[in-house]
Structures are given as C-alpha cells and as structure tokens.
Image 1 (cartoon, rainbow, N blue to C red):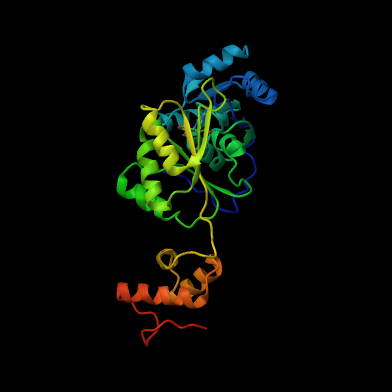
Image 2 (tube, rainbow, N blue to C red):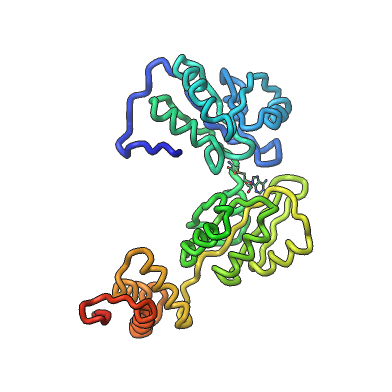
Length: 306
Ligand code: SAM
C-alpha cells in the first residue's frame, strides 16, 4: 500500500539518523555506474539489494566488500522495520534494485516512503534507468513523455488502462515481460490504432536490439522471433491531433472526455479545439453520442453551442 506524505511534509531530519542512499546501478553493462555510486556502495554500512546474487557480481567487479541484505517484493514488509531501525541508530544504507534506479517500478518505493515518514534523510545517487535509456534512442518525441511502468495483467483491466491513454499526446513508455508482449501489442493495436512504436530489448547488453516500427510491424517481428527473450521496454507514440480526423474519431474523443466528467458542451468545445476540427462537427458528434447513450445535457435535451 503506497504511503502518501502530506504535501507540506518537510520535517527536520531525525538527529543521529543515518542516510538512505538510493543508488542507481547498471541495467546491463557493468561499467554503467557512476564514480559516486561506487564510492557510496563502498562506504555504506549495508547494501539492501533486490537480488543479492545479482548485486554481488557488480560488487565483485568493482571490488566492493560492503555487507549485503536482501530487500525484495515478498520480504519488504518484514525487512522495512529492520532497515529503519538500523538507519535510526545511525547506519547508512545503500538501496539498490536489480537494475537501474530503485523506486522506479520496483520495491524500493516502499522503503523510501517509510524512511521519509520517519524523517530519515533520503539521498539520490542517480544513474541508469531503462525507461530513460530507451527513450533517449527511440526517435520518438522525448521533450514530454508519460512513464506507465507495468500494465495490469488481467485482459479487462489492461484494456481499460490503455483506453484511458487513447488520446494522450505524449510518448508512452511501458515495461513488460517478453512473454506478455505479443498480447499487449495486439490490444494496443485495437485501442491505439497502428501507431509508431519502439521495442528496446536488452539495452546495454550483448544482444541489445532497438526495433523502430509501427505496432503491427513489432507484432509481426514477435511472431517470427518466438519465444522472445530478454528485458523489454516498449514505447508508443502519443496520439496525434490531426486536422482531418474522421467523425468517428471525434465522437470517441468526445466520449473519452465525457468519461472524464466534462459536460457534452464542454467535451465538444474541447474536442474541436484539440483535434483542430470545426466546432460544428464536434457538436454534431457530441449530439449523436448523447442520442446514442440516451443522456441529456441541458433541460431542453440539446447541447448548448456558444
Ligand atoms: N528500476 C528499473 C529502472 O530504473 O529501469 C526498472 C525495474 S523493473 C522491475 C524491470 C523492467 O525494466 C524490466 O521488466 C524491463 O521492462 C525494463 N528493463 C530493465 N532492464 C532493461 C534493459 N536492459 N533493456 C530494456 N528494458 C529493461
């Protein structure tokens, strides 16, 4: 259960407490680690690692002898109070995940929020993250993007999750296991249409592969390379507002806005503005939608066009 801190949470650090260092580690290539990360891992009293065997390889490579303790999804509830106790008694702990930046789609978040709520200093030691590495070479717009992490596994929830993103104009970034990727791409094609996408696989490793195609092209590739292996990050282009959007697309955009609580008139106005279509077309489609759904906006049953 995520712990949300109040917005004005700015407590004095607990006196005598050690620091929780959130240390980014390589997503593949063992040389992708900063000098500061190496020093922090060396100087910390303890390293809390998602997979101690995996992290030990990194430590051996960089001749680091700091003791390791496991901290993963299934022991995080039990482990957190033990780590907090050590931190409160003055020990410094370096938190690392399997790969990349702790707290980004991994159990690090749990410990970070609990440490913050006890006023323990939490300090980032930045470095790699699969999402940013993939975005940086994707060729998709990178000035603005949305990181979604792992999508729900159940088909109904997954579809609803994607439908809520249908008109999101920013580049979308997902993590997914290679086993579920083909199914995800298929649902994305249904929901998003055949958009530009990038499959970034095994970044920084020997079999690094970045596939830049549309969703159907990636789907075809997955069928030929079966079963797909390795770590995968998937990026999908955001929704492109076009001048010549067809009426059905306008209607589904109005529907999407209605689901987000806008009135029919507001939805039509916003659809016209954001899709670059005439107000008349947007109002017509809003009206059609209301008729279809048997809903009424104004007391007269019409949609106020101002
Ligand atoms: N905290 C990590 C980060 O900052 O990137 C991510 C942790 S998440 C549990 C692991 C997911 O990241 C994988 O399932 C995969 O989707 C993605 N990933 C990790 N390493 C990758 C790599 N070398 N290439 C592509 N994607 C990778």
